[in-house]
Length: 393
Image (cartoon, rainbow, N blue to C red; front, side):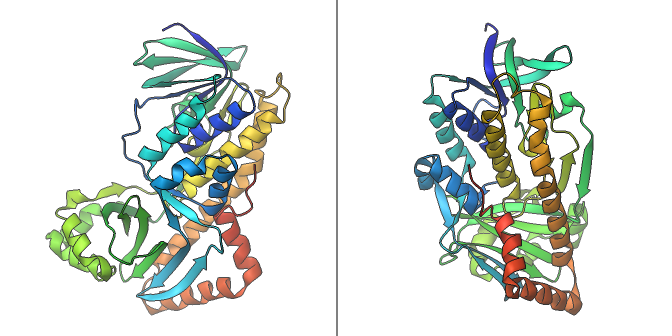
C-alpha cells in the first residue's frame, strides 16, 4: 500500500481511540486509525462505563446504538461477611456494562460516517518517523503491507503494552497492588439486579460485575503471585468452588457449572503505572498507554475516555499550526496527572482496607464506610470523581 498523509493518526482502536477519533472528526480533522488486531474478537477486561461517561456518549448521539448491547447499573454495594456496609445509588444517572467486542464496531461505524476517516485494522506501528526531533508520522507493517503514515499528530491509545509508549522511552512510576484477581464469567442468577458488588469474606473479597447479555464477571482476590499456593491449598477444585459459593450463595448452580478446573479461571496480575511524560512534539499518549489503574469500578476504561475528551478539547481550542506541539499537548498531563495518581492512591487504600482480616478489619471498615456515607460533602466529592459525574465535553 502507498504511504498515507493525515492530520491525526491514532494507534489503538479501543474505546478511547475510537472516542477521540469521533470527537476530532466532528471538529473537521482528517483521521487515520490503526490497530494490530484485525477485528474485535479478543478478550477485554474493562467493560463498565461510569455514569458521567454515559452522559457524554448521549451528548455525542452515540449511546442509542450502544444501549441494546449494554446492561444498566444503578448502584454499587460493599458487603462485609454478608452485611451491606456501603451502598451508593446513582440518583437518576446510571452506568452501563458493555460487551466491548460488540460495542467497538458500532463506535467504528460512527467514525466511518465521516469522509475524512479511514482505518487499517491488522496494522502495527513499529517506528516513529522524526524530523528535527519532532514526530511526523509512523512506520507500519501488517495485513496492508509496509507503509508510512505521515501525520501532524500521532496519538498512542494502544493499551498497557503500548508500542508508542515504548518508542518514546518515557520514565514510568509503577504502583504495586497487594492482590491479583482470578476472573471467570458465570451465568447471571435470577434476581441479581442492576448492581455491582464487592463481597468481603475471611480470605479476601469477590467482585461481581454484570456482563452482557446475561452473565456475571466474577473476580476473586488472591495473594499477589499466590495462584500456586492457592492450588496447593485446594487441590480439588470442588473444595475451592464450595468456598466461593458461601460468598455468592445465590449463584451456587451457576458457579458449579462454570468452574470445572483451575483452568476455568483467567488470572490477572493487578498493577498500575503512571508515565512521567505523556507527550513530545507530534505525539501524545492517552489511556492505558499513559497510565494504568487497578481493574476496579471500571476506572481504567473511564479514565482513558476522559483523556480522549480532554485531549480533543485541547486540540480543537488550539491553532491548526500549533496543536501538535508539546507545549500544547502537555496540557493533558498537567490536567490529568493528579487525578490519575489520586485514583492509584484510592485503589491502594481500598485494597488495604478490603484485605484487613478478623474482627478489627470489620470494625475499621464499618467505621470508614459509615463516615463516607454520613459525611455527604466529603463522600459525594470522592464518589462524584470516581463516577465522573461532572464530566463535560
